[in-house]
Image 1 (cartoon, helix red, strand yellow):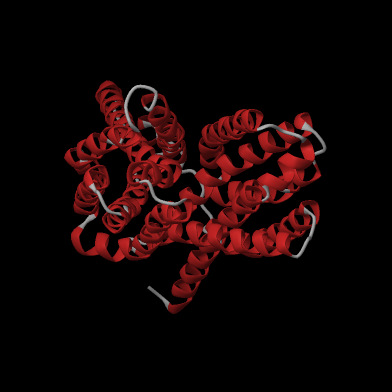
Image 2 (cartoon, helix red, strand yellow):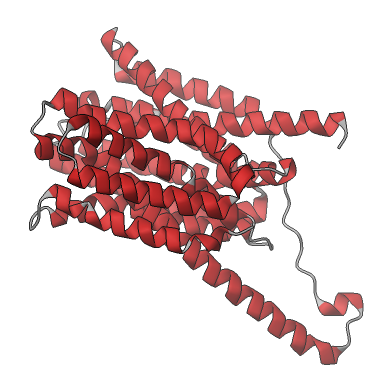
Length: 399
């Protein structure tokens, strides 16, 4: 590999880092301004819950449409369009004056966010493939880092008394400038045209055999997409449960203060971020199957510790185990999905994303429903069992 190609690859890697970071920053800017925006628009907590589902629903639509669009136009073009879209639409919630305008703003922002999620991961797969070694987890770590930076910026501007519309407008301009700077450095990728036997003088009596082979290959890829999607569903379900229920579980189970209970989510998110920065090296050393298998087992063990723990420090260790165990799993799934090959690689990835994202939404809801009949701590048996199943099915990410 020539030095010039080395520089281009490093530049592309930096650009994808920028896309993931930008996504995390802009998403956090909306989250930290929720109280101020809901107060101004006079949106109740129950209505906000419906709006969050609306945002998630339009994100799913964006994911499904982004896959075929990336196959047709290239992931670089889709990153440019989607990153510009969320940069523009982040202003919407800040300018909303009532429930209707806020709903429209969140629907537009959710659609762009879903499209960016798929397109930037498709771009990350191309860069990782060119590098020839695992680097996907670091991209996802930058999303977490971006969320942390965005939350700090939002908190600082609100403390300074800066109105949300001013802060979000500044975030929008920064997002557009960042997008313009990073897009030229992304990897150009064009869909390979499908070949036909007659183009190469293949005898007609071999056409049927080639057609059957193509159908068998497509069927095999479809099964793998389903398996990858199911594992992503479980891992993101467990992540959603930890993010939304960890603090409440610790408070109810151990009868501690809200401040102490908040440490549970802190332990989980800290080890997840650190784990994502380390997961690429681990994957390179032991392989994606081992990383997914033993990470899932570590997460299951973490849930077990949380369920039986009678002390706060031990519970924090359990939630930290969950974060570390989940850190590298989802990136391995997305890498495997992006490397299925063929002219519809981004479309297949978008299917995996959609199934997985449903797990992130379903996990907290399922636990909430279960708490109507059993204690919250007992309901954590569900993600425990499901992550054990992930460990058993880890071979699906074999390279």
